[in-house]
Length: 127
Image (tube, rainbow, N blue to C red; front, side, top):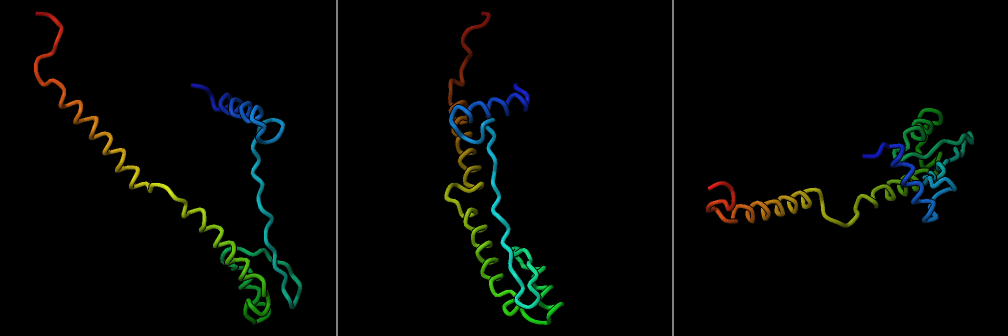
C-alpha cells in the first residue's frame, strides 16, 4: 500500500497529464464570494447567511425595524442560498437503504450458490 504522500503525488501526476488543476496538478476549489447587504439607514454592510441572524439582530436592536425595511435585498439572497443548498441533496440515484438491500441480495445469491454445490463426499484426499 502506498503512503498518503505517494497517493497524492500519483493523483497530481494524473491531473497534470489530463490538464486538470494548476501547474502542479492540484485541484483548487474556489469559494463563491460572500453575499453582503447594506443597511439603508446606517450604511453598514453585513454578510447574508442562510438564517440572517446578524442582520435580524441589527435591524431589530439598532433600528427597531424589520429586516424588510432595513435590508430589502437580504431575505431574497438568503432564500437563494437555501434553495441552492437544497438542490444538490436531491441528486438521483439509489438511496443508502437501497444499496444495502442490493448488496445483501447479492450475498444471499452467493451463499445459496455455495450451499447448493455438491453436499456429498469431497473429492481427492487420502483413501
